[in-house]
Each structure stands twice: as structure tokens, then as C-alpha cells.
Length: 271
Image (cartoon, rainbow, N blue to C red; front, side, top):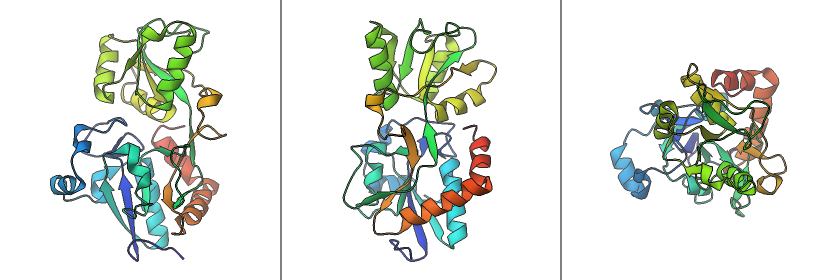
């Protein structure tokens, strides 16, 4: 039996700037940086966006949880949370039943009251590049890149790229990302050679610009940076006493067994 914050309702805290995993339908795409709006209070966020319902959100994880709600007869309520770094704490603080937005299990995301669903997707690292300025053939990252690449500071991918570039004395080739939109414009103009992104975001960006952009073959992050033995994986954080971890895991297993999950991953260009 599920123990939710409100009977019959699933309160979902969503980071709305991670295309195509979870995003606000009024925006083209975003990245995992908290926007300036992330510094205002939750009350102010609610005032600015009083209609924080599922109608304003789209993406892989949104669809997955809406299917989950339909199967279990739950009424979904989705609230926007701009602070990605602390999103995983919402179930522990009893602010939400579950969180979405491309969240991975990590050593710093542990708490006595927290549980995780089974992983449904594994992320690898890659570089998006302009077809006019491709990587050197037959080489992997970073040897194949001779120009500047941008990555999201603080992310696992950024740390991985920095260590690899530093080992070759090429740390000057790594810049911090602004946001996805600005980075894509810079790439299209030829200001930089590549964007460091996870495979999920990378494929989605290339899908939006298939004539101009392409993607390198992905690779696993360095062993010492892997948050789990399996690498980087997307899961759903929930309260440990809610019963959601077990129920979501069973739901994901059924979605995988029927092929529904694979179809959804294809829909969002994630496989």
C-alpha cells in the first residue's frame, strides 16, 4: 500500500530545464544549471507560476510518471523546482512524493529517509560537434578534439573532461557552459568545437539540428568518478516509507518487459 503525502495524489517535484527528460513546454530547452529564478523563494515561484500542473510539462520522465499514475489510479500534481542540486531532498523533507529531472544516485545524495527506484536508463559521456569541424578520425576524446569544448561546471562530465584534458596538458581547451541555448549558438557559429554532454541530452540536441551537428561515439566516465558501480543511471528518489521505490521498480520492470519503455526512449531519441 502506498503512503503518499495526500491519499490518491502523487506530488511530483520536477526540475523543468532538462530537455528531453523533463522540461517546461514554454521553453525550447535548458540545462541543469539553476536559473536566476532558482534564487527566489518557493512562495514566489508559486506566485509566478500558479498553474504548476502536468499540462506545463513534457519529457520522458513526465510521460513515465503519468503512465504510472494512470495505472495506479493516482491524480498527478507536478510542481516546478529550479534548484536541481537539492531536488532529491524533497521526499525526505515531505515536500513531494517523488522527484524527476534526470536524477542519478550519487554518494552525496544519501539520507536515512531516502530510497531510490530501480535505474531505468544509463548515461554515458559524449561530445556534440559541428559537421564542418569534426573530431580527428580514429581517435577518442580528448585526443580527437583540437579546439575548445564546453561543459556544465560541477557535473560528472565536466570533471571527467577536465581530468582527461589535464592529463594531456590541454586544460585550456575546456570552458564552462553558459546554458544549452547559448552553447548551441556558439557551436553553430564555430566559436567552439564541441559541447560536453551526457548521451541523453546530446542525442536530443543533435536531433534538433541534424544537418549541422553530429555526436561522437560515447564513452564511460573514469572509474573513480562513477557514482555507482553501473556508472551514471537515472532513477526516481522517494521517501523510504512510502512504498514507492518498490512499486515504481515493479512498474518500470513491466514497462521494460512489454517494450513500452524502449518505445518511449526511441520517441525521445535516447536510444
